Amino acid sequence: MNLNLTLIGQAIAFAFFVWFCMKFVWPPVTQALQERQKKIADGLDAASRASRDLELAEEQVNETLRESKEQAAEILEQAHKRSNQMIDEAREQARQEGERMITSAKSEIEQEVNRAKDELRVQVSRLAILGAERILESSIDEKQHGKLVDKLAKEL
Amino acid sequence: MAGNNPTPTEYIQHHLQNLTFGYHPENGWSIAHSAQEASDMGFWALHLDTLGWSIGLGLVFLWLFRKVGKAATTGIPGGVQNFVELMVEFVDNSVKDTFHGNSKLVAPLALTIFCWVFLMNLMDLVPVDFLPMLAQKVGVMFGADPAHVYFKVVPTTDVNATLGMALSVFALLIFYTIREKGFSGFIGELTLHPFNSPNKLVQALFVPVNFLLETVTLIAKPISLALRLFGNLYAGELIFILIAMIGLWQLPLHFTWAVFHILVITLQAFIFMMLTIVYLAMAVEKH
Image (cartoon, rainbow over all chains, first blue to last red; front, side):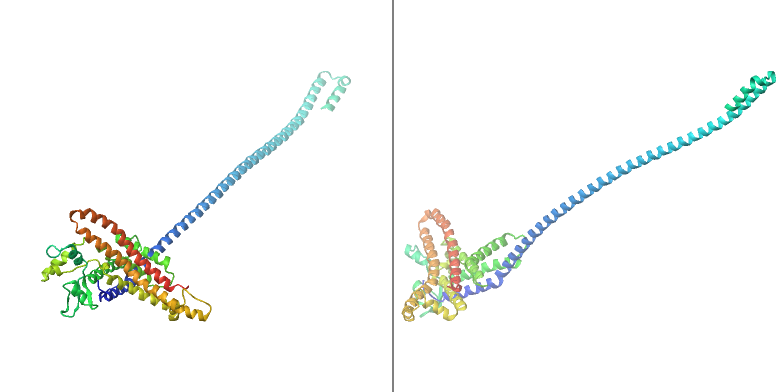
């Protein structure tokens, strides 16, 4: 167990090993470790970002869905309103048409009645005159019937 | 076991002797044939087994981690990459928790220490006779006396190995202190603590006392770093050797001690790394 040159040899070997380790072993391993750390951190980042994006997208989808529902309801309501309106309009139109037709019919009837009345008046007068002529032909009693014929003619 | 029925003492001593190559005063540059020859070589000797195993294991560590580093993907990591990333993150977290200075060196340094020391300690779990006997067979092939082929497998049971690392850490410690606080700051740290006084004269009296105390503190750092690892592993190795001598009953005992030792070798590697980080952190931190 003597102290000898081995000590120096061991020290030199030690120095060489440490130098080699520092130059060629330590850097690549730690670099790989750091790069992997960075990769993992990036991956986690991306994952959280993606989940946030997903949340946003879901929100947007819900928003759009709600809007479109509202829109559909609005359109439906408008359609209802419009149809009611159309029905009302049609009804009104029909009523007016009817009234108009009734009115025209009435006036026509009136005209017809008037015309008939006139005709009747003429014919009755003619009949009356005829009747009167007959009566007058058979037994004309001017005194007796003159008054009657006058009255008749006046009334007709 | 070496030779013809060695005594327990011989057996243990044989196991605790490194394969030494060095300059012997009589034989010149040669491999030591005995503990006496090895100690005669003095400082100019190399423990071939310690260096061989530690460098080999260090290369295994670097090769494995480099291979993974080159093929590292940022996607889903495979089995080995998972393991390597686990180690790197573990060390990186330990360093970040403790060392607040700015340095590209400390984290790889800590990783190297942890893995390398762990691998060297791991050799302790290989049965104590297995690799030395293999070495003896090889030695005999080269014409050596089997009793004189020494082979100590665990580099961290050699105080040279642990002290070599601890002194490197110590050099870094001083380098960082001077880089962060300047040379005057380094001297100030040695002389102006723990006792100081607003009075210049009293302060001048305190300086030698402070210097003595702080120098001991400073020197204690690498020594304790080296001896803690060495002591733990040496003791563990010695107990493995002792267990190996008791015949058949060694099997359950060996297993128990090995299981316990898994904890020890991991813990010692971790302590060496953690103390290195703490020492360097203290060096760069302002008081």
